Each structure stands twice: as structure tokens, then as C-alpha cells.
Image 1 (cartoon, helix red, strand yellow):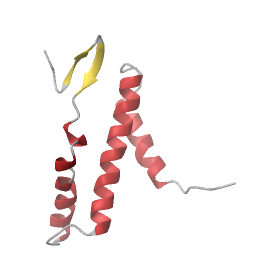
Image 2 (tube, helix red, strand yellow; image 1 turned 90 degrees about the horizontal axis):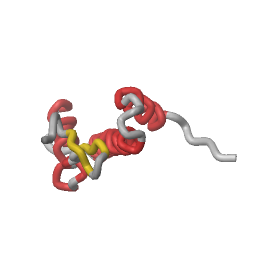
Image 3 (tube, helix red, strand yellow; image 1 turned 180 degrees about the horizontal axis):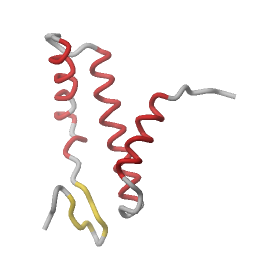
Length: 90
């Protein structure tokens, strides 16, 4: 029986991720626009919302790959920190 969105998937801990659906993506951008008093999400608000959702998805993927051994909060922190790091090229 699933507990808090977690369930057994072929003997592994799995997490249902409904936010991967494209129809769910506009909601966080709309919330950012509403907080800013904007009628519709700006490009920047849409990009920030998409980046945040992708950080969450990547952190969850790594957590699931570790069979839940890695700390999810730490993975989330690392994902958001990586997003803010400057990319350098050789």
C-alpha cells in the first residue's frame, strides 16, 4: 500500500511523480506570477519554475537510484546549489 506517495516498485522503493506531466508545469509558474502581482507568468518566472521542478526530479532520480540510502533533502540542496554555479569551460 502506498504511503505518502511511496510504494514498492519491483522490490524497490518508488515514488509517483505526477509533476513530470507537462500539464502540471504551469502551476508553479502561475504561483510565482501571482505572488509578483503579474497577470501571466513572465519568461523568467516560467524558467525558474521549470528549473525548480527539474532540480526536484533529478534529486528524486538520484535518491531512488540509491534505494533511499542518500538523504533526499541533501540531494535537493545540492541540485539547487548546482543550478546556481557558474559553468566554466576549459
